[in-house]
Structures are given as C-alpha cells and as structure tokens.
Image 1 (spheres, rainbow, N blue to C red):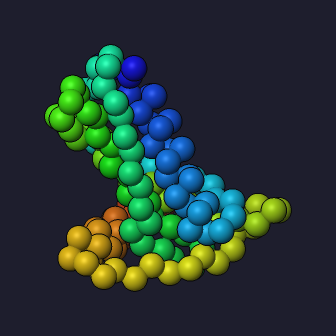
Image 2: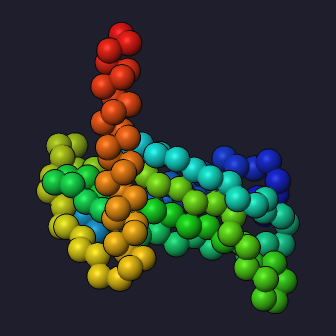
Length: 136
C-alpha cells in the first residue's frame, strides 16, 4: 500500500494512532503539539500488512508523550520494523483550553526505559527552546 518513498502516508498513520491513544488516555479530545521525531527504519511495499502500536510513555500536567511503533508483515511470518515516532499531545476541553490528564506510572523495565527517554526528550526541547530564543 505505502511503497518506498511514501513516508507521508506513514506519518498520517502515526499521527492518527497517536491521537487515538492520547484521546483515550485523556478521556476526551487532544491536539498534536509536536512530532518529536520520526525514524523510517525500512520501506513498506505493496502487499505489506502495516500495523501501528502506540502507548503513552509519559505525562505532564496537561501533556502526553506518545510513542508509536510501526511494523510491516511480509508474507506469512516476517515482521519488519518500519518506523518509530514520538509525539506530544495536549488534552483540551471543548473550548480548546488545556486540561489535566491522568499520570502514567512505569511498571516494567521497558516502561522505565521509555519514561527515561521521555525525560531526555523534554530536557532536549527545553534546551533547544532556550537556544532558539537567544538567537532571535
């Protein structure tokens, strides 16, 4: 379906899956704040069955850091990692104002690693914002 060079379709899929995950966690509407990064690991080809899995990996007061992991199944059993992305969403009320979200609490080693990565990305965003403000 997607084929090599069709990254915009994967980006749309990632945003849709991340939004659904954020909205479910927030128990209401959420908006995309940033696509932190997206890594394309392998191309997709006609005939691939593409699957995306997303999870809330960290929360702030109103924000949610969402990790999305995309695979493609080729043939009967081969599953190939296709893309990985990390997005930030903010929960909003019916007037578009930010509202609080439930926290997430890691329980497994993988969840602790993902939460640590969220902290690193947040620090990076803060440092980058400061540098950009100084450049203006």
